[in-house]
Length: 356
Image 1 (cartoon, one colour):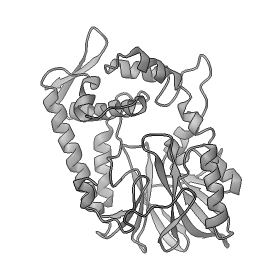
Image 2 (cartoon, helix red, strand yellow):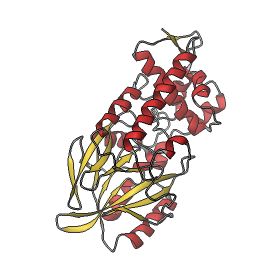
Image 3 (cartoon, one colour):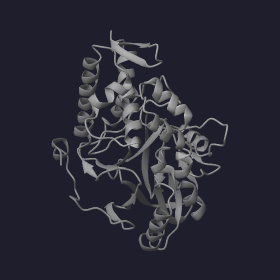
Image 4 (cartoon, helix red, strand yellow):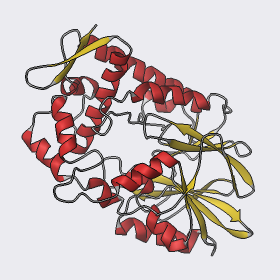
């Protein structure tokens, strides 16, 4: 456990649900873990006891990726953890594959509606369409992504080819998205199991990320906006090449300032914890340190690719490298749009940044 983690409280210690098992973390709230095929090897999903239009059942929050193994684990959950009751609704915090991948299957399996924000629903619908030959890929892979990363200094032909070959990466994990949905919005109160859950929308990590807070339980389902061990990925990718997401993310965290100190945070990755305000302070400090690191490095012109090994000291596989480049560029853009860096494109077509 790193020093920052030691400042947080973990009510369940090292206890975690087995695949297909559940742990009750609050009245009517159950914790389920699903495996992921990445270095980040799990996602937490949540079961909320519910009643809609006189029907007793459950609301699911987030889904896992579309894999037969994950479907099998869900079937085990349905058999052992739902008390013979149906799934009444599926809420998705945002459009990343580990959160929405099985939404279509779950909604069809239970004839249940999908609830999520408008922007993330629309992006998921767009990205889940497989690329066809001759058409531009959408998402963060394929030829548009190759060109984006090349502009920012990624010169390795092998990496280019691997990114190009992953043009159907998103639809492989999210093969479909329900054709209709119910929109949730910032500040809305959703009645779940006789309790109000407030929607808190945040930006920077996803287009329109929804967290859920229940004041009567003092429980926050934080999605990816607040994680206990790792920092939330904040990236610039090819589909919005001039994005400035880091200030959006840090500003979004202010929405949690009013929550009680003893709020139980249910994150998408890692263990449930208390210490929300401490963790948010850690995130502000982390990004302030990274920004100082980046601006110091840019005393001489630096590409995004040059910044990656400065920010990330460990060995990175290709999946991690693309996110690391996206995050390095997010920090460069935060400084550039704040007037602290200049940028220029060299004769080699690579964009470089330098201290103003």
